Image (cartoon, rainbow, N blue to C red; front, top):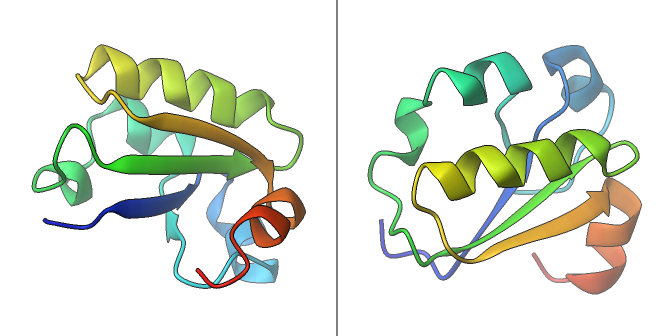
Length: 89
C-alpha cells in the first residue's frame, strides 16, 4: 500500500461505531496484538496516526507497531485532536 498516511482508531468496535474520524481504520487492541492482516501491505515508513479516547491505548498501540517494524508513528490522542490537526483527512 503506497499511502502516505493512515489513521487507526484503536478503540473497541462499539466505540468506533458511535463516532470516529472519517477514513480511520478500526483495529482494537486485541486485534492489534495478533498482527492484523490489514497492515500487511502498509509500508513500514507510512505515517500512522493512532488515536483512542485519552491517548493511553494509542500509546500502547504505537509501541506494538514499533515492535512490528513501523517507524513513523504518531499518537493522535483522541478523535477530536486528530480532527483538529488533520482536518482534511
